Amino acid sequence: VQLQAFGGGLVRPGGSLRLSCAASGSIFRINGMAWYRQAPGKQRELVADISSDGTTNYDDSVKGRFTISRDNAKTLVYLQMNSLKFEDTAVYYCYANIASSNLITPRNYWGQGTQVTVSS
Image (cartoon, rainbow, N blue to C red):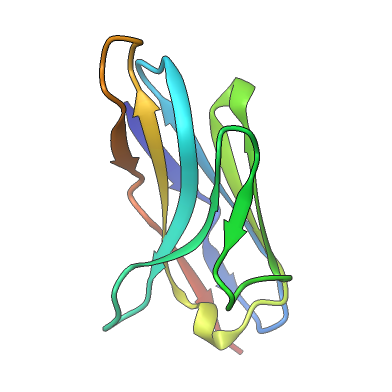
């Protein structure tokens, strides 16, 4: 199983970006999915998560600006980021809890990270 994230880049304050993350490989079921980020010199932190039934949760710093969504049929998770701020600059990582079969305990997987830089 692999997760591949893409969509990062350089954006001005107030701008928007959409991150995508695709899961591939031997997938029986995807449980929770999420986006984390890690800024230089800081610990990795949860940005938003979404359960298999679509329930979402956001860090207070992004509420009202970011939207997480998923396409279960295509095993994709998205993060729409609006009204970006300097402090949103970080490497963004996607995460998924995936079962490869109904006989195997689900495992946590991480994408490779995509850089988001907010700069004027």
